Length: 353
Image (tube, rainbow, N blue to C red; front, side, top):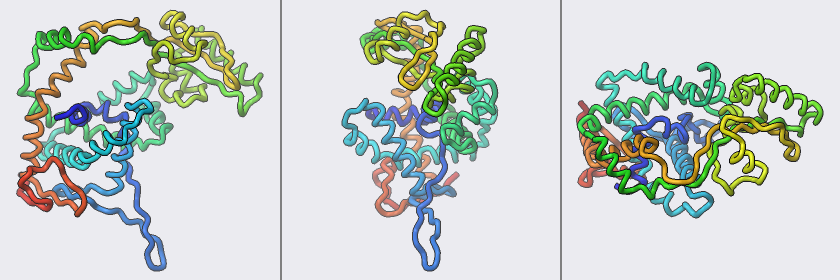
């Protein structure tokens, strides 16, 4: 399986990664004209036992896939790779459906894990309550119910794959250490800093009022109030729901003013009020690392995960083919399941356990 294929399996196993691009499973309906009225019609492109996959779901996943390739390309030409991977999109949707159905057949409950997962996410974002997490999702234009359902489905696929495939695989720490030593050069990274910011806009308010707000916020920060909570409350920036977290920046990619703060201000320290055009900003250095090779301890979880992916790939694909053979799957003409056994026709039926 190629590099992109490994990413697909990783998305099934890791609900947090999948959530970056698929937090919502809301449908986009096709509106078609009808005599005397306009009807909302949802086109079904596949049936997997007692579940359906609709054209709007497929298009939603297709757009998320395109966005991921666009992001990873950093402005480069990604269309050829996108079109290549899109051929497996329906396969991946069928994979997930079959795994969720197996979990349901085996009465797999992920309720406790779902609560723990959402609470972990809440803590990583620096949110005080689940209500804050729900509000953050809604602020991003996401349906909270759909998000919970999406995470729940991913946890079910994760549990089934662990029971059926991963539990039979053993990765020793020595294997991880050897892989790290053999691929050390891959973990060489530039100097980077992770920032948080609070932006007070002066576009729609009097500059004096904006500065007063910024001064109040800075005062609260100096009184050791939580920066992330203040960002969610006061910031006009799009990162406000994430506690002002702007992610990692490498040296040489920011404006001189930001770069000076990012690489000279001590980690955990906050800037004074910065005037940038019609905005006032307060910046905090959340984390930073020097240029060089990341340590084994830092890379160990990522390498372990990668080794599991490599060992799981053939067995997982065999298991998914077996689920297909036990299931009743129908596709409309023009759509292909690239995960189906080669000898099976487009329209196939079998008995599901």
